[in-house]
Length: 355
Image (cartoon, rainbow, N blue to C red; front, top):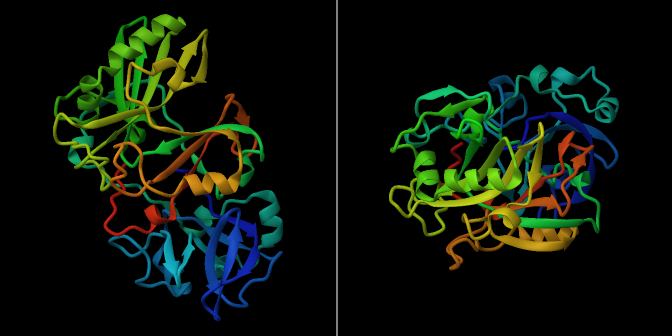
């Protein structure tokens, strides 16, 4: 899940192709449906992204009472309005009436706290929970920003690698060579440097033991001369999320696929090519494209049917984009890595979003 920032943005306004009273306000590559005439191209307004949880007063002010997602009808999610995908909310809250929004947009001011907006935290099912312990040696996973919000992460024509994004639950494994110790965690626990104590009922431990991930990580540490190795995989199947890829998380057919790997070598953590290092040793997420970055082409690849099962059983969640050569991004201040999510995935009915 990406980080939450509620910022002022300079808008580009487009006609709605199927509604005379509506328009589309563009932020990055996102578009949000707005009332016609409310905003003009070049003006600034506040953009509230998906997965934001709004306070009751702001929901009432925006006229959205009973129209948002979640049990409290307070969470922003993507919807289709008159056939057009609307992602996020564009508004000018009364609490910011004294703010120069154009200047705030230039400065990148975050208004989340001032507006009382927080990030939605998915629930943790019992099979993904458990006893935890402090794990300062654990290598954490990073939040990935959406390329539609930050389109400048990659330059057009830059060599990139695109892999399929699976709808499961992220599993973090760290192998510490000097201790021959294995730490296993979820993304949420890992962000707090906590590891799950081993339990045969736990989803993540079942996945890594069932697929021999600790042994593969130990072999990789030996080949690289690494003090620590991090293997990051997606656990998937029935009972994990609503998209199953033909696997069953409740049985031995629990799905697992590696999407990233890093190694602590000489005190520096380096992100490496999982396919080059682990192909033939562990299941890997499908690699869909290698070549020059083209934003329209990438967004097209993000849609369609999944390829994990080999049977196109259901829609694709999206894709993850990386540069062919790992690098830093001045846009995000971290790794140059991003996701693009399918509109059909965002607006599907009955979907689950566990951590």
